[in-house]
Amino acid sequence: MTTHPLDRLFATIASRKGADPSSSYTAKLLAKGELHCAKKMGEEAVETALAAVGQDKTALTAESADLLYHLMVLWTACDVTPEDVYAVLTSRESRSGLEEKASRKG
Image (cartoon, rainbow, N blue to C red; front, side, top):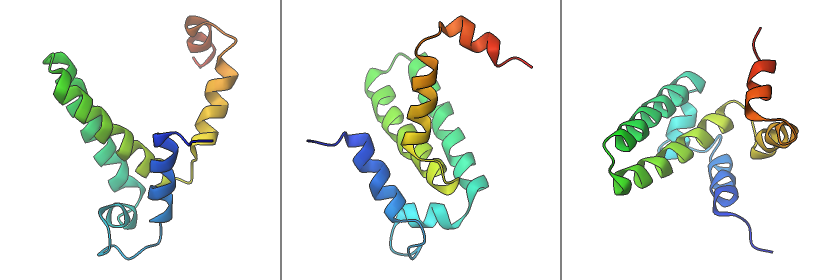
């Protein structure tokens, strides 16, 4: 069975946790902590949104890849796994988006 590219990417990122920051960009990001990883993910989210607004499909595709990478770095920094996220998504499958969104309002 072939693993999904995102699962392979997450495994690579997770393997860098605790590695020498001078050995990889991912290890460097993780060594800087959750706040830094969150800021980088936020920057990539803005760049992705701007590429979409600019209707630049090539840039949107590249920025989306960067965003997914930085999201997974943030997950790793915060000890969240794709399976954790998949479980939440699975629990939401049986409800409409509007119903699920309303259930989260405090």
